[in-house]
Image (cartoon, one colour):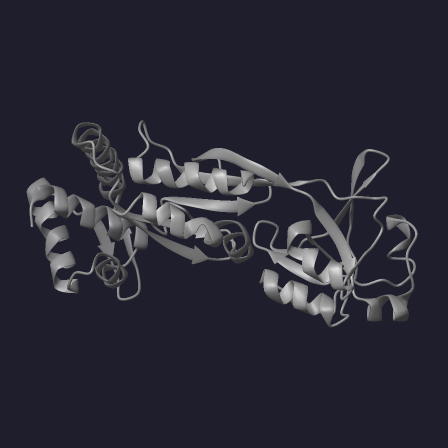
Amino acid sequence: MDHLDAMRVFVRVVERCSFTRTAEDLGLPRSTVTEAVKMLEARLDVPLLLRSTRHVRPTPDGERYARHCRSILNDIEVAEASFSGRSPQGVVRASVHGTLARFFLLPHLPDFLARHPGLSVELRESDRLVSVIEEGFDCALRVGVPRECDLMMRRVTTLPEVTLVSPAYLARHGVPTHPDRLLADGHRMIGFWCSAVNGPMPLEFLCDGERRTVSLPTALTVSSAESYTAAAHAGLGIIQIPRYHAAAALAVGTLVELLPEFPLPAVPVTLLYPRSRHLAPRVQVFMDWVQGCFRA
């Protein structure tokens, strides 16, 4: 294994915090991954990783070296692409919300792959806030206001949201007339767990142009968008989701809109990616394509 390949392996170990996961990602024997790191440590004469039976993390020298490696490898990819005239090559690893992927991205993916035959795409679905760098993603497509200050951000679109309940829920609890009456009139919400606040997200409304939050009792809290919607169909409480995700249910009446005169603020959709002087061509074309999917 040459020096550049060893650097690629080392960066992946730092991102994945695991020799085993790195070997699986790169399709290499675990012993090859271990030897690549040992070769770099011998070359630099410093320990790059702290190893335990359950965890691998970089030393301070390892963190500094990994930053230099990322910059070097990215510059090489950009330079080679500018001279080769070839279409981008390699794997794009992206974290996405599953509902966004299924509704906006997957229908357009065959055309994207046909136009870029040298690329393959690895979509990891998650409703949690992944760590883009530590978990080895090239980018993440997020719904909501990003909180990461160490990543670059690219606004993709905003999505209108809607407050929903099932007809059965309304039959039991009645139709509220104002967000301020929800708690007093005994209404319940389905909690959607948010790691950023370490608890269920409150409901949000616009009242006289001002954003207002309302927290209600919850009999159920979930961390999956699909379970969140399914719980509303089961009549367990009030939910708030992007309107596109509710279109089919609204059309057939299995969910109904609540308090439409007090709409939610539109929710931003953002691409997050690591800071770099240059963006690798494979990541650039993928993010351009993602943005186009929301315009289609």
